[in-house]
Figure 1 (cartoon, rainbow, N blue to C red):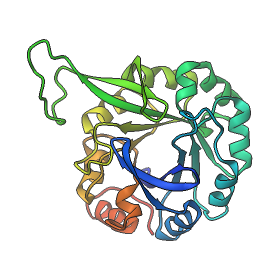
Figure 2 (figure 1 turned 135 degrees about the horizontal axis):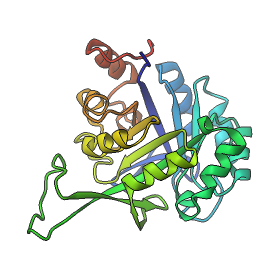
Figure 3 (figure 1 turned 45 degrees about the vertical axis):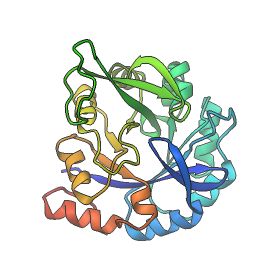
Figure 4 (figure 1 turned 90 degrees about the vertical axis):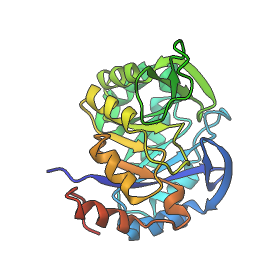
Length: 268
Protein backbone atom coordinates (compact mmCIF):
# COMPACT_ATOMS: atom_id res chain seq x y z
CA UNK A 1 0.00 0.00 0.00
CA UNK A 2 1.29 3.45 -0.92
CA UNK A 3 2.26 5.62 2.02
CA UNK A 4 0.48 8.94 2.49
CA UNK A 5 2.64 12.03 2.63
CA UNK A 6 2.84 14.88 5.14
CA UNK A 7 4.15 18.02 3.45
CA UNK A 8 5.11 21.39 4.99
CA UNK A 9 4.66 24.37 2.67
CA UNK A 10 6.93 27.39 2.49
CA UNK A 11 4.94 30.37 1.15
CA UNK A 12 7.70 32.82 0.28
CA UNK A 13 7.44 36.57 -0.30
CA UNK A 14 10.51 38.81 -0.70
CA UNK A 15 12.78 35.99 0.42
CA UNK A 16 10.92 35.23 3.67
CA UNK A 17 8.42 32.55 4.60
CA UNK A 18 5.04 34.14 5.32
CA UNK A 19 1.56 32.95 6.22
CA UNK A 20 -1.87 34.54 6.14
CA UNK A 21 -5.54 33.71 6.64
CA UNK A 22 -7.60 33.13 3.48
CA UNK A 23 -4.70 34.65 1.51
CA UNK A 24 -4.67 37.95 3.49
CA UNK A 25 -3.29 39.27 6.82
CA UNK A 26 0.20 38.05 6.00
CA UNK A 27 2.81 37.66 8.77
CA UNK A 28 6.45 36.59 8.81
CA UNK A 29 7.26 32.95 9.61
CA UNK A 30 11.02 32.71 9.15
CA UNK A 31 13.94 32.04 6.82
CA UNK A 32 13.14 29.51 4.06
CA UNK A 33 16.49 27.68 4.16
CA UNK A 34 16.41 27.34 7.95
CA UNK A 35 12.85 26.01 7.90
CA UNK A 36 13.71 23.62 5.07
CA UNK A 37 16.57 22.17 7.12
CA UNK A 38 14.27 21.82 10.13
CA UNK A 39 11.56 19.97 8.20
CA UNK A 40 14.08 17.69 6.54
CA UNK A 41 15.26 16.63 10.01
CA UNK A 42 11.66 16.46 11.32
CA UNK A 43 10.74 13.66 8.92
CA UNK A 44 8.67 15.56 6.35
CA UNK A 45 8.03 13.46 3.26
CA UNK A 46 8.31 16.36 0.84
CA UNK A 47 8.59 20.13 0.87
CA UNK A 48 6.66 22.65 -1.21
CA UNK A 49 8.13 26.10 -1.95
CA UNK A 50 5.69 28.65 -3.39
CA UNK A 51 6.77 32.16 -4.37
CA UNK A 52 3.32 33.59 -3.68
CA UNK A 53 3.76 37.00 -5.30
CA UNK A 54 5.78 36.06 -8.39
CA UNK A 55 2.69 35.86 -10.64
CA UNK A 56 0.90 38.88 -9.22
CA UNK A 57 4.13 40.93 -9.42
CA UNK A 58 4.84 39.62 -12.95
CA UNK A 59 8.33 38.43 -12.07
CA UNK A 60 10.21 35.13 -12.06
CA UNK A 61 10.61 32.81 -9.08
CA UNK A 62 13.62 33.62 -6.91
CA UNK A 63 16.22 31.13 -8.16
CA UNK A 64 18.77 31.97 -5.47
CA UNK A 65 16.30 31.21 -2.68
CA UNK A 66 15.31 27.93 -4.35
CA UNK A 67 18.98 26.94 -4.54
CA UNK A 68 19.48 27.65 -0.83
CA UNK A 69 16.38 25.66 0.10
CA UNK A 70 17.26 22.69 -2.13
CA UNK A 71 20.74 22.51 -0.62
CA UNK A 72 19.19 21.94 2.81
CA UNK A 73 16.85 19.04 1.98
CA UNK A 74 17.21 15.42 0.93
CA UNK A 75 13.50 14.95 0.33
CA UNK A 76 11.52 15.82 -2.83
CA UNK A 77 11.12 19.56 -3.36
CA UNK A 78 8.28 21.12 -5.36
CA UNK A 79 8.73 24.73 -6.47
CA UNK A 80 6.06 27.05 -7.84
CA UNK A 81 5.13 30.67 -8.42
CA UNK A 82 5.76 32.68 -11.59
CA UNK A 83 6.37 29.65 -13.83
CA UNK A 84 5.35 30.76 -17.33
CA UNK A 85 7.32 28.59 -19.75
CA UNK A 86 9.21 25.36 -20.30
CA UNK A 87 12.41 27.36 -19.81
CA UNK A 88 11.18 28.64 -16.42
CA UNK A 89 10.53 25.07 -15.36
CA UNK A 90 13.97 23.99 -16.55
CA UNK A 91 15.60 26.71 -14.42
CA UNK A 92 13.76 25.49 -11.32
CA UNK A 93 14.79 21.88 -11.92
CA UNK A 94 18.38 22.99 -12.47
CA UNK A 95 18.18 24.99 -9.20
CA UNK A 96 17.37 21.79 -7.32
CA UNK A 97 13.61 21.26 -7.60
CA UNK A 98 12.31 17.74 -8.16
CA UNK A 99 8.88 18.91 -9.28
CA UNK A 100 7.54 22.23 -10.50
CA UNK A 101 4.11 23.68 -9.80
CA UNK A 102 2.24 25.73 -12.39
CA UNK A 103 -0.93 27.71 -11.78
CA UNK A 104 -1.77 31.11 -13.27
CA UNK A 105 0.15 30.75 -16.53
CA UNK A 106 -1.36 27.32 -17.11
CA UNK A 107 -4.88 28.71 -16.73
CA UNK A 108 -4.07 31.37 -19.32
CA UNK A 109 -2.45 28.80 -21.63
CA UNK A 110 -3.27 25.17 -20.79
CA UNK A 111 -0.83 23.98 -23.47
CA UNK A 112 1.95 24.91 -21.03
CA UNK A 113 1.09 21.80 -19.01
CA UNK A 114 1.36 19.56 -22.04
CA UNK A 115 4.63 21.19 -23.14
CA UNK A 116 6.22 20.76 -19.71
CA UNK A 117 5.02 17.17 -19.39
CA UNK A 118 6.42 16.32 -22.82
CA UNK A 119 9.76 17.95 -21.98
CA UNK A 120 10.32 16.68 -18.44
CA UNK A 121 7.72 13.97 -17.80
CA UNK A 122 4.38 14.14 -16.00
CA UNK A 123 6.06 13.19 -12.72
CA UNK A 124 7.67 16.65 -12.67
CA UNK A 125 4.50 18.63 -13.34
CA UNK A 126 2.26 19.69 -10.44
CA UNK A 127 -0.79 21.84 -11.15
CA UNK A 128 -1.72 24.07 -8.21
CA UNK A 129 -5.36 25.11 -7.87
CA UNK A 130 -6.63 27.96 -5.68
CA UNK A 131 -10.34 27.28 -5.25
CA UNK A 132 -13.25 29.14 -3.69
CA UNK A 133 -16.82 27.96 -3.10
CA UNK A 134 -19.65 29.58 -4.98
CA UNK A 135 -23.18 28.83 -3.83
CA UNK A 136 -26.42 28.87 -5.77
CA UNK A 137 -28.51 31.28 -3.69
CA UNK A 138 -31.64 31.16 -5.84
CA UNK A 139 -33.43 29.38 -3.00
CA UNK A 140 -32.28 31.93 -0.40
CA UNK A 141 -29.70 29.39 0.71
CA UNK A 142 -27.14 32.09 1.52
CA UNK A 143 -25.48 30.82 4.70
CA UNK A 144 -24.37 27.27 4.02
CA UNK A 145 -22.02 25.26 6.20
CA UNK A 146 -18.63 24.40 4.73
CA UNK A 147 -19.53 20.76 5.29
CA UNK A 148 -22.58 20.92 3.00
CA UNK A 149 -21.88 20.49 -0.70
CA UNK A 150 -25.48 20.81 -1.94
CA UNK A 151 -25.81 23.69 -4.44
CA UNK A 152 -22.06 24.35 -4.18
CA UNK A 153 -19.66 24.88 -7.05
CA UNK A 154 -15.97 25.61 -6.92
CA UNK A 155 -14.45 28.53 -8.78
CA UNK A 156 -10.82 28.66 -9.84
CA UNK A 157 -8.68 31.69 -8.92
CA UNK A 158 -5.23 32.76 -10.18
CA UNK A 159 -2.40 35.13 -9.23
CA UNK A 160 -2.15 33.99 -5.64
CA UNK A 161 -5.91 34.00 -5.15
CA UNK A 162 -6.24 37.59 -6.33
CA UNK A 163 -8.07 37.02 -9.63
CA UNK A 164 -11.27 35.02 -10.09
CA UNK A 165 -11.71 33.08 -13.32
CA UNK A 166 -14.77 31.70 -15.04
CA UNK A 167 -13.40 28.15 -14.81
CA UNK A 168 -15.03 25.41 -12.77
CA UNK A 169 -12.37 23.82 -10.58
CA UNK A 170 -13.55 20.24 -11.09
CA UNK A 171 -13.60 20.59 -14.87
CA UNK A 172 -10.15 22.19 -14.72
CA UNK A 173 -8.79 19.27 -12.68
CA UNK A 174 -10.03 16.85 -15.31
CA UNK A 175 -8.59 18.94 -18.15
CA UNK A 176 -5.10 19.29 -16.69
CA UNK A 177 -4.98 15.56 -16.00
CA UNK A 178 -5.63 14.89 -19.67
CA UNK A 179 -2.92 17.41 -20.60
CA UNK A 180 -0.29 15.50 -18.62
CA UNK A 181 -0.23 16.84 -15.07
CA UNK A 182 1.23 14.32 -12.66
CA UNK A 183 -0.23 15.72 -9.44
CA UNK A 184 -2.72 18.30 -8.17
CA UNK A 185 -2.13 20.69 -5.27
CA UNK A 186 -5.65 21.77 -4.24
CA UNK A 187 -5.97 24.76 -1.89
CA UNK A 188 -9.32 25.80 -0.46
CA UNK A 189 -9.24 29.59 -0.20
CA UNK A 190 -12.21 29.46 2.18
CA UNK A 191 -10.43 27.15 4.62
CA UNK A 192 -6.90 28.53 4.22
CA UNK A 193 -5.49 29.57 7.60
CA UNK A 194 -8.82 29.05 9.37
CA UNK A 195 -7.69 25.87 11.16
CA UNK A 196 -11.21 24.43 10.96
CA UNK A 197 -10.33 21.51 8.69
CA UNK A 198 -9.74 20.88 5.01
CA UNK A 199 -12.62 21.18 2.53
CA UNK A 200 -13.18 17.44 2.25
CA UNK A 201 -16.14 17.82 -0.09
CA UNK A 202 -13.88 19.61 -2.57
CA UNK A 203 -11.07 17.09 -2.11
CA UNK A 204 -13.25 13.99 -2.49
CA UNK A 205 -14.96 15.44 -5.56
CA UNK A 206 -11.65 16.14 -7.29
CA UNK A 207 -10.09 12.85 -6.13
CA UNK A 208 -13.07 11.01 -7.60
CA UNK A 209 -12.76 12.86 -10.90
CA UNK A 210 -9.06 12.23 -11.59
CA UNK A 211 -6.60 9.34 -11.40
CA UNK A 212 -3.53 11.28 -10.31
CA UNK A 213 -2.46 12.11 -6.73
CA UNK A 214 -4.20 14.99 -4.96
CA UNK A 215 -2.48 17.06 -2.25
CA UNK A 216 -4.86 18.63 0.28
CA UNK A 217 -4.08 22.23 1.24
CA UNK A 218 -5.79 24.86 3.38
CA UNK A 219 -7.48 24.45 6.75
CA UNK A 220 -5.43 22.15 8.98
CA UNK A 221 -5.79 23.01 12.67
CA UNK A 222 -5.34 19.73 14.53
CA UNK A 223 -4.19 16.17 13.87
CA UNK A 224 -7.74 14.95 13.24
CA UNK A 225 -7.98 17.23 10.21
CA UNK A 226 -5.08 15.46 8.48
CA UNK A 227 -6.77 12.10 9.00
CA UNK A 228 -10.10 13.42 7.72
CA UNK A 229 -8.52 14.79 4.53
CA UNK A 230 -6.94 11.42 3.78
CA UNK A 231 -9.98 9.41 4.82
CA UNK A 232 -13.05 11.50 3.91
CA UNK A 233 -11.32 13.73 1.35
CA UNK A 234 -9.57 10.79 -0.34
CA UNK A 235 -6.41 12.88 -0.69
CA UNK A 236 -3.04 11.24 -1.26
CA UNK A 237 -1.07 13.80 0.74
CA UNK A 238 -1.72 16.54 3.28
CA UNK A 239 -0.01 19.92 3.30
CA UNK A 240 0.15 22.54 6.04
CA UNK A 241 2.05 25.74 6.71
CA UNK A 242 1.40 27.94 9.75
CA UNK A 243 0.53 24.99 11.95
CA UNK A 244 4.06 23.67 11.48
CA UNK A 245 5.87 27.01 11.16
CA UNK A 246 4.68 28.33 14.51
CA UNK A 247 5.20 25.06 16.38
CA UNK A 248 1.54 24.24 17.03
CA UNK A 249 2.09 20.74 15.67
CA UNK A 250 5.11 18.71 14.60
CA UNK A 251 5.32 16.63 11.45
CA UNK A 252 6.27 13.67 13.63
CA UNK A 253 3.12 14.11 15.74
CA UNK A 254 0.89 14.11 12.68
CA UNK A 255 2.56 11.01 11.26
CA UNK A 256 2.31 9.17 14.59
CA UNK A 257 -1.41 9.98 14.81
CA UNK A 258 -2.04 8.80 11.26
CA UNK A 259 -0.07 5.60 11.79
CA UNK A 260 -2.03 4.78 14.95
CA UNK A 261 -5.23 5.01 12.92
CA UNK A 262 -4.10 2.71 10.15
CA UNK A 263 -2.90 5.27 7.63
CA UNK A 264 0.38 4.06 6.08
CA UNK A 265 3.13 6.68 6.47
CA UNK A 266 6.90 6.72 6.09
CA UNK A 267 8.53 6.28 9.49
CA UNK A 268 10.39 9.27 10.89
